[in-house]
Length: 420
Image 1 (tube, rainbow, N blue to C red):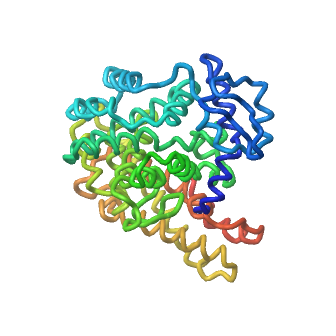
Image 2: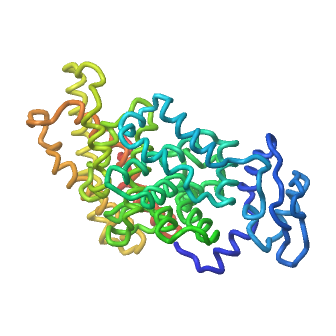
Image 3: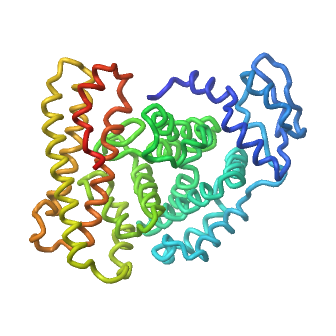
C-alpha cells in the first residue's frame, strides 16, 4: 500500500481534480490568491504571486504537472485562523452536542492550547476549504480535536502532548479532500472499487502532512493509522498492535467513537459497547473516557417490553446461526485450489473467530436466560453484530487483487445471508 517517495511527490504535484473543484467552490465566497509564483514542471509560470485564481485557469492546471503541489501555493484572502478555530470549539461546547457533557472536565485545558496549535498555512488553507464546502466535515474535525485533547488531558498529558493529540484529531481526515466527495459518508452502498478509493484517505493525509515538512513523524503516522485496529483488521495497512503508535491508537478510538455518536438514535452506551465488543481491537488505555461516559449517561427511557425482549434475543440468535454457517463455508473454502479464495476464506475465519470470541467473553451466546445481560445490551449486541457481518465481505476482499469470475462464484455462498 505504501508508495515510494518519488511516486508520492509526483502524485501530489499532479493537480487533483477534487481538490481543485473544492478550492474553486470555496472561492465563490472569498478570493483565492497565489501565495507564490506557480510553475509547471517545465518552468512555465501559470499564476503570479498575489494574483487571484480564476475558474478559467482550471483546465490549464489539470493538464500540467506542477513544480510544487497546488495547495501549497495558494491562500485565501480571509481564511481560517486560530481565533476562528477557538470560536468553533466554544460553539461546540455551547451546542448541546452529545459529545459535550463528558468533555466538560477537560474543556479548559483543551481551550488553552488552541491558540498555540502549529497551523501550517497550507493546513489553514485546506481547513478553510473544508469549512466552506462541507461544514459538517469541519465540525467532525473540531469534535475530533476536542475529544483527542480531552483524552490526553484525562491521561495526564503535558501541553505538548495535548497539542499533538489535538492536531492529529483536527487533521485526521484531511486526505478525504483528494477523493470524489460523492464517496465520502456513502457507507454500505460503496462497491469494492469505490471502497478501495475511500480507504486510501489516511495514507493521502499522511503524504500531504509529511510533504509540508513541519509536522513530526508521530503526528503524520497517527493520521495514517486512524482506521487501523490492534488485531490487524483495520486499514490501510492492517497493522497489528506492535506496529500502531500510541497517538494512532488514541485516534482510532476517537474516530470510532465519533462515528458511532453520529448515527441516528445512538449514544455513548452504543459507542462504549462497540469499543468493547472484540477483545484487543482498541487500546483499553484510550477507551477509558468513552466507557466512563457510557456508564455515567442517564437512562434513555423505560426498559423494553416482553415482545421487544424476545425480539432482541431472537435477533442475536439469528446472527449466531448466520455466523456458524459462514464459518462452515469459510473452513471448507480455506482448502480451495484457488489462492485468492483461500486467502479470502482465511480472512473471513479470522474476523468471525474474533467476533465469536468477543461475544463469548460477554456471555451473549448463553441465551435469554443468561444472568447479568440487560435487554438493552443484547439489542446493542445484535445491532453491532449485524453491522459487522454486513461489512465482512468487503473487509475480506478489499486488499486482494482483482478476483476472477470463478473466484467470486466459489466465494458467493460464504457471503450469502450475512446481510440478513
